[in-house]
Length: 272
Image (cartoon, rainbow, N blue to C red; front, side):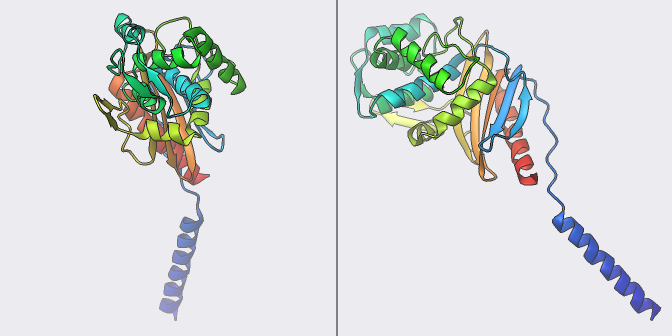
């Protein structure tokens, strides 16, 4: 009898333990240590998962091209054709900027130029698009700033369409707001998710090393001496869209850090 009672008692305890374990909420992963100067990670439910100097104004390098694409997609048809001019080619060369290797006289659709803008981060493509859809670069920059105001990006000022060094500034929080809005456009989402895009005369490769990781959908790399290595990244995980922005990091480390932050955010979503 005593033996039976002990077995029964032990079994009952085991059931209790199993019940407790099965109903306990998942534990979030340890918060990663982030060395980047400024960081912000938020999801589509507006839950903030990480914030470090998220509202401090700073240069954001080629993350500016997210707004360039956002404005162009509101202004243009994908089938519109833009003729590349000498000024577009010279703009990239003279400023030592990244290029889509466009050639004077080329006729490229807006869809093609958006790939040249976002994958190899072509300053020649950004110049052509801004020139065509301002029309003129000054008018285009005005449209960028108007869009920023509509989106509530109160700590952002654009002065060009490519992120080359200037008095422009933004913040990780503002760039995350923009990125979330841009990703709502399926064309933008498709472009920034592509690793490679080929058209006659060009093969453009995405500089975002996060692509291929679970749920990752882009978004944009950037670098200037003043801004450091930057990254806007996003992934669909845990039933939500997670968006993050890193400013002032090291080249390779930014991708490792972004992956850690995505894992961390996903674990917090699962535990909520």
